[in-house]
Length: 613
Image (tube, rainbow, N blue to C red; front, side, top):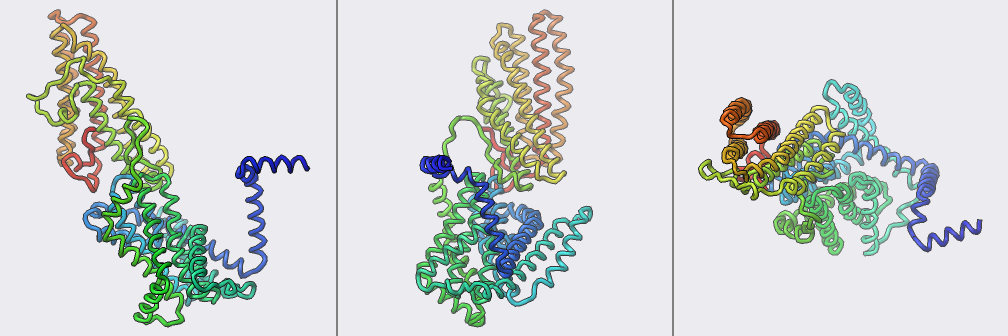
C-alpha cells in the first residue's frame, strides 16, 4: 500500500493533470454520489434541482420544435439581410422572440456565415437583434412566472404536444415538440418557485448577501459561472428571479447576477463556434467582447446605471417592491446599452475583428473548401446551401484545370473570348495535368465528400436526397477532371506532331471543349427555360459529334492520312472527350437548377457560380 501511494505521489509530482485524467471515472462517481446525497438531504433543494432539470428539458424541446421554423424565417430573410442594418436587426429580434433562445439564433447565424450566405457585417446586426430579443423571456418569467400557478397551464400543453409528436404523419411533430417544451417550461418554473419558497426552512441564503463593491463583483462572477454551468441564460435568470422573489437574494446582488448572466450567455455560442468558419469564430468572439465590455461599464458605473433603471421603473409604473419586474427591466437596459454602442460602430467593429483575428496562412498551396464546416453540417438548410456553393466552387476549379491543362490559356480567356480570338496553346505550353489535379481538385473533392457524409446523418429524407444529388454533381466534376488527365498526354504529342491532319483533328477537339465551356458559362445570366434548352442542345450535339467523328475517321483512313495507331488513338480520345462533356453537362444540370444565392454581385454571381480561379 505504501509503495502504491509513493508511486502515485511521484506520478502526481511529475505530471500534475495525468493523475486526475486517470482517476476521472472515480471522480465522476464521487460527484454523482455527492450530488445525490445533497439532493436527498432536503426536499426543497431537490425540488429546485428538479425544476431546473425540467425547465432545461423544456428549453431543449422548444428549440428543437422551433428550430426549423426559425431557420426557415432566417433563410427567407437572408436575401434582404445584407441590404440594411435595421432589417438584419429585426430578423435577429424576431427569430429570438419566436424561439426564446438567442443561442439557437446565433448558432444558426454562425452556420449561415460559414456557408457564405451572409457576411460578418450582417451577422453583427443579427447578433444585436438577438441580444434584445432574449430579454422578452425575462419579462415573461417576471410577469407571469412569479405570480401565476403555471403548473396547471403546463399540463394540458404537455398532453397536446405529446399527442402531436405521436402522430408524425400529420406533420405536426415540430409544433408538438414546441408545445411540449412550453409545458415543461411552465412545470419547471412552478417547481423552482415552490422549492425556493420552502428553501429557507433548510438554509438561509440571505446570510451570504454582500454589500458594496465586493458583493457586486462576486455576484457578477457567480451569475456568469451559473449560466456557463446551466448553459441557459433563461434558466439562470429564472433562478435569480425566484431567489429574489423568495427573499433569498438582495436586490443589489440580483442586479449583479443579471450582469454576469448576460456575459455567461456567450458560452454556448463560443462552444458552437469551435468548428465554424473564420468569420463565424470572429462573430462568437465579438458576442463575448461586446457583452463583456458592457458588463465592465455597468460594474464601473453600477450606482448610476441601477439608479437609471429604478428611474425608468418608476416612470413606467413598476412598483418599488416588484423586484422581478425591475430585474427584467435591468436585463433589457443592459442589452440596450450594449446595442447602443455596437450597432452604430458595426462597420468599424467588423474591421477590428478581422485585424484581431486575421486569416491564417495555409500550410500548402492546395485549394481548400470555402464554405464547409461542422457548424453548417449541423443545420439542414445551411448544410444544403453550403454544399451547393462548394460544388460550384469545384466547377470553377474544373474550369481552371480544363483551361490550363487542355487549352493552355487563362480561364478568363476560355470563358470570354470569341471564336476569332480563340487561340489555344501548342502541346508544350499545356500545364501539367497531374499537378493541377493535386493542387486544385483532389483536396477540395475529398472535403466535399467528407462534409456530405457528416451532414446527411441528421437530415430528413428529402434533404438527404438533395445532398446526394449535389454529391453526384461533385462526382461528375471529379470524373471530368480524371478524363481530362487521361487526355492530356495524347494531346501534347498530337499537337506537337508533324502530321498536320492529326494536329487539325486535335485542334477541333480543343475548339469543341472551349465551345462547350463557353456555352455553359453563358447560362449564368440565362433564364430557367433557356438553361434547360441550352443543356439539351449541348447533349444533342455530343451525340451528333459521335457519328460525325466516326465518318471523318473513315475518310482519313481511306485517304491514308492517318496511320492505324494514330487513328485508334484519335478515336479513343474523341470518345473520352465526349464522356468528359457528358459528365460536365450532368453536373451543370444540377447546379444551374439551384436558385441564385443572396449577397452576390456581378454576372457570374447571379447564379452563385464562382468565377474561374
